[in-house]
Length: 68
Image (tube, rainbow, N blue to C red; front, side, top):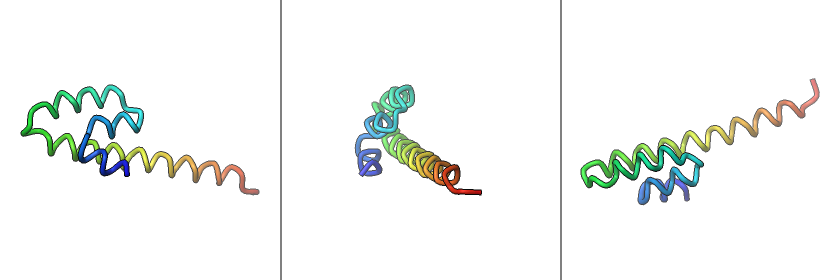
C-alpha cells in the first residue's frame, strides 16, 4: 500500500516513512511536472529502504532473543 501512495503522492509516501525533510524536498521537485516521475521513483526507493530497515530490526530482535 505504501508503494502505491509513494508512486501517486510521493511526498505523502515519504511522510508515512517518517522522512519529513525529504518529503519537503520531494514536494518542491514534484511541483515541476517534468520531475514527477523522478519524485515517484525516489519515494518508492525510500519506502523500500524503510521496509528493509523494519525487516532488519525484526531479525536483530529475533537473534537477540534466541539462546546461544
